[in-house]
Image (cartoon, rainbow, N blue to C red; front, side, top):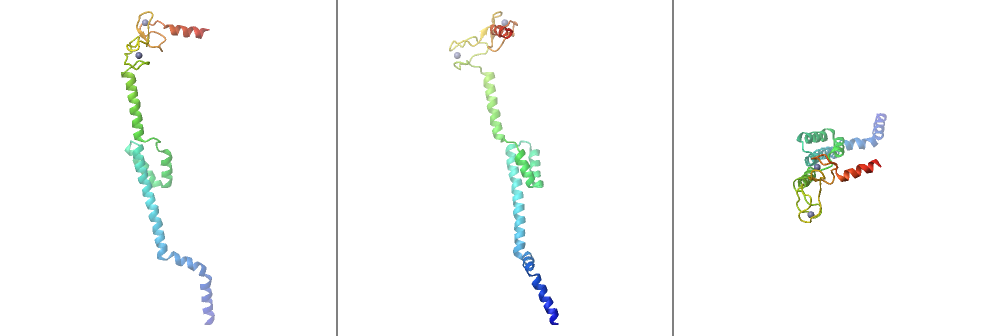
Length: 174
Ligand SMILES: [Zn+2]
Ligand SMILES: [Zn+2]
């Protein structure tokens, strides 16, 4: 009988170091830590998907594409978040709209409201001189007398080469 008791006592002393761990893993405290960990992971996961949704709405117009980005964030987790952060459009929609509007306004100003390059007075594109500062805006064609833009090398009305163009072609021949 005493022999059996000694063996049993030996058994408990052998497994003692691990016993503390296994005891800890079955305590309510450990259970709480596990639940807390999963709760934090789920919270971060959902928060990241929500961030993608908010960020994508400011950058992407297409609702389907926004949905795909959010779904990728939910399904692929951190990989989806990183891929979205790298591949997302660098420009906000607001910025792009403002830039497009600026560009449109500039184009409109150029096309609808030509002005004298020297004093800014509105000047139609067939004026030879500025009505306000009298500076020469265009040269008349030597053959038909119509106003020519300084950049033109040939008169579009009568096909006569402009003097600047003949100078340029002479320079090229030299
Ligand atoms: Zn002028
Ligand atoms: Zn002409």
